[in-house]
Length: 148
Length: 114
Image 1: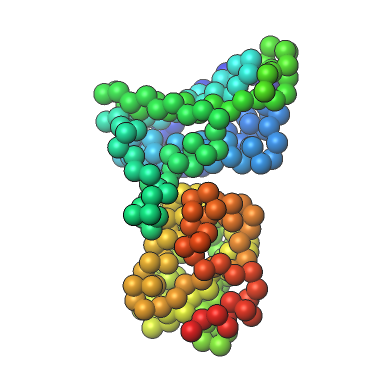
Image 2 (image 1 turned 90 degrees about the horizontal axis):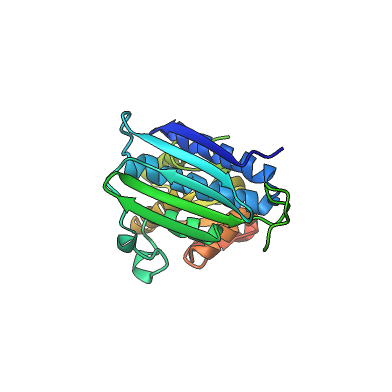
């Protein structure tokens, strides 16, 4: 049976990034996503975890990253929260702009948006919450067929 | 699996065979150090064989861009060889596929260096 919700509290370390990616890969597979989608979801979670650990919590051992997976009727909803200063989505440069193409960073959020169906970024003074949503195609957690 | 590399030379071109993952942390650092080491020895023709690289994240993409610009700024050339579908697709969506000189045949890639 697929659990409807799973939560993790993680340290602000590089290991967290790998663990978050691994958890996402397993949970996405359990929820019936195909190989390609599992890879996309895992990569989106990895990128969000990198942002939380590096840019949000800045490796501060006192700060944690929370990771929640929730299976709703139609979606897999993944929420990642850090305890940093808060990311302003309006200030994220477009990595596809010609002047940014050769920059060595700044592609994480773009990749997340490319791989997920919906991405919501909610910054606050307590940190940043990023919600990653992927529509499910198989039977939902409540046994009903999900809409596509 | 982190990044593993070995370097060989063919007709003056340094071919770096890479396998594993190029991701934030060790994988990116390994790639950076190899390119830095080759440049420090005056080796400015570098062909990164990514045929066995099964995963790359945004930090790894950034590291490829950094390697490309660093080599180019020193008057050298860096090309990519044998992209897996995953890496190919990532370079496509980030619009970097046309920035890099990407080859799928080693002999042809070696000849393409000036």
